[in-house]
Length: 201
Image (cartoon, rainbow, N blue to C red; front, top):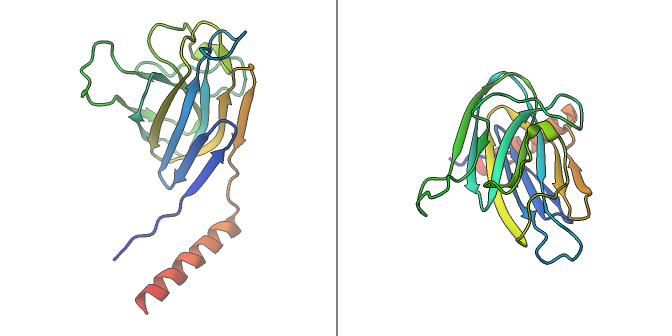
């Protein structure tokens, strides 16, 4: 018997970021943009996923494709200029000198219910950006490349709230994710029940 899953795909065309939300999981695929082919720009961009932890519990962040990115987990304090530090470990990146076939980094944390930020930025020692800097679209301390793709998943009682993709002109492309109304859930449930009934027939 097949199982059916409800999932919502959000696509930001300008930033080419894809956020897929299913019950218990958020998956993000996007790219960090660098200054190598853009005259008059110095640095590289940063991306941010704001998500809600619906209840206290464990989340796991898995790197699906880390590229040259570094991921940093922080608590959202309700202000734009600084995030809350959640104590170590709080970041994922490929360790310098790791073998090519080494497992991709993963992070498991116990978190309280609340709002959190996962920052995707350039890995290594190319930048001094940290979560105390808040939302920064263009980090002038990096650069030297064109683009670096990445993808990750967050597993737990989570749902996406907002994705901010940094642009080289120092602006953000912002995608917000609406909370489905109870009537939407009812319609989805009715549709799935109809599919199950048709399949039995």
